Length: 318
Ligand code: ATP
Image 1 (tube, protein in one colour):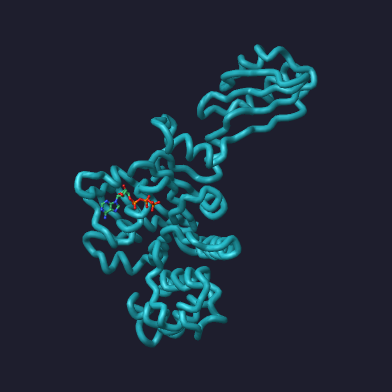
Image 2 (cartoon, rainbow, N blue to C red; image 1 turned 180 degrees about the horizontal axis):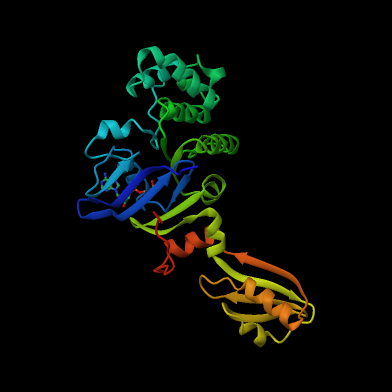
């Protein structure tokens, strides 16, 4: 299937007075992707989301939503997106049905189609049983569902969610995550979080922001590969550790016990294939080969604490 670019942000910056909250941030989001923005407090996540949602003007750079320039044609561009800010924009004194009907109107759904739009959004967000209840009587998890429902009521291809699970209990978190994953199949979603397992559980790609700059951008799947740290190798008739050090991409080799070695991998290298070939060639009897990747948490801490610059930082491909 053709991948459609839903958000294209180029070189975004934002100054608050003399403070640069964002500098040179570029990103692209395609249909079917869930991109997680991760960063410590004050990193610039909310600023990024507000700019992408057209609620805050950038000091520099441009945003296209579904091919439409947000600065040139804001109403047309915003028609393609649904936004759930950190504080859901709810009217607690309305019922769920009343509120969603109102939200459909705000999003430009024609009157004749509003009842259908409300029914669809309620179904997608599991709100059928609480349709007639006042929003302020709902649990926080259900209120968050209502927030999500208003974001998708006009069937936008793009959904932007700022910390969608903050303040929820573990059951509610699971439910909202499942809902987001489900929506992610037919939309492009950007969500922000500083909860690492959340990004790992929900997103297909992660972008780590620190001090207003992108310090890491990669798919969740390849994050594990790229951050391969070491290999544990079992060899029945293994050589001295020194011989293993000769294999391309191996930085250090140590013997853990008889027949078991740990190899430290050079940055970005993957010596597994060369190692398997060498084992066959030399009759070492390869019985085990495990890669040990850094967790996203380790990547995050490394990139956001201290002055580490990630030389292999991968910027957006597109
Ligand atoms: P958090 O996880 O705490 O919500 P965040 O990553 O969303 O943080 P932002 O809210 O985007 O970060 O803030 C980025 C920087 O911009 C911070 O240093 C913040 O203090 C500053 N900032 C944000 N809004 C304003 C404002 N209206 N006026 C001045 N400075 C601001």
